[in-house]
Length: 151
Image (cartoon, rainbow, N blue to C red):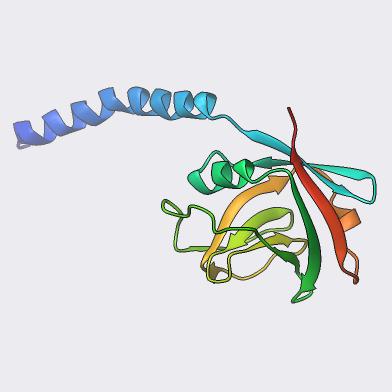
């Protein structure tokens, strides 16, 4: 049986040795992330959520507190205009939202909170998600909300 070339042996050894180091680095990155906790307040009811540790999520946090009126859109999300555009410089080109996702739709610059899953949409950027129930958002009428950081 022919012996494997030395290059293949070297590459195999490199991947075996690097595996634990790569896994450790990824685990360490998760520990270093700082999540921003927020409250979405609707008629005195407090809904808790967490913003992602991303450029867009951190930029959104700098806008808080916000007083917005959420309007139903597509029977799947609540939307509201934001006071300014967010920094989306590191955001992916598209996103497939799930129930509870807090997003921004880049072409319009508006906040979009999904109460139903939706199709992958170009220009949609995830900011975070609700930690629990969001039933207070599911109304056919416009909903005044206050979004604030939890300190």
